[in-house]
Length: 216
Image (cartoon, rainbow, N blue to C red; front, side, top):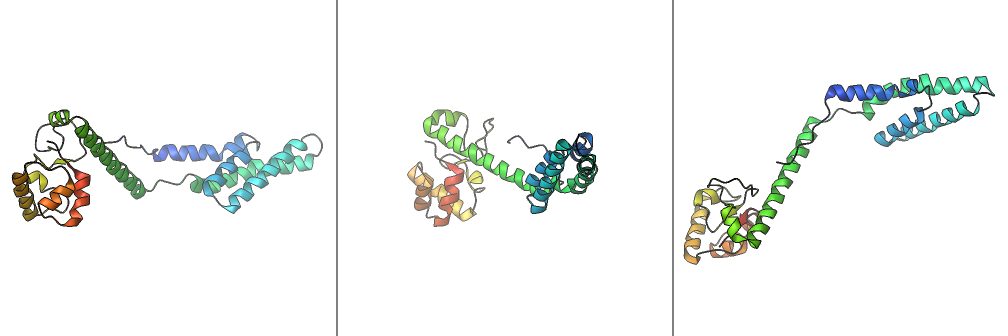
């Protein structure tokens, strides 16, 4: 299996969001624009971008009036420090949303399925390049003891009927047709040949191509 992405624990996420919301207070308003730039990027809303601009103006006002205009400096300081902190706490749940367990599970399922597909492709390429090694690794033979993970391939030339029966779309009648055709021709070379020789439904060609391998 591919390495699973470990979701951040809820407690760590909460701590991080609180720490983020305290940046305006801890920086005495100087870093408030950075906090809301991050919020605007995450939230992707016009109001969030407007807040970033307002706090940026507040910061500029603070630094340009620090020694010339006490009223403007105080206004910028209060806006960026107290207002920014309160605002950050108000939106922190939207900036740091809790992960959706269903979506996370679906993502993991997709990653796993893609990983199995990659394993099958690698095993098919190995079998084409070195059939002897593929047979030694028992690629396509889940009925035999082995250590190599081929992603769920089935060797249509050597696997028993019970294994072939596990392929998508298979019925006992179709398995019997495949076994009879295999006995008659000796070995198959492709999914198309299996379908034609064993008189299988045409819609089985695609799944057989995905899940089968053909060793001599």
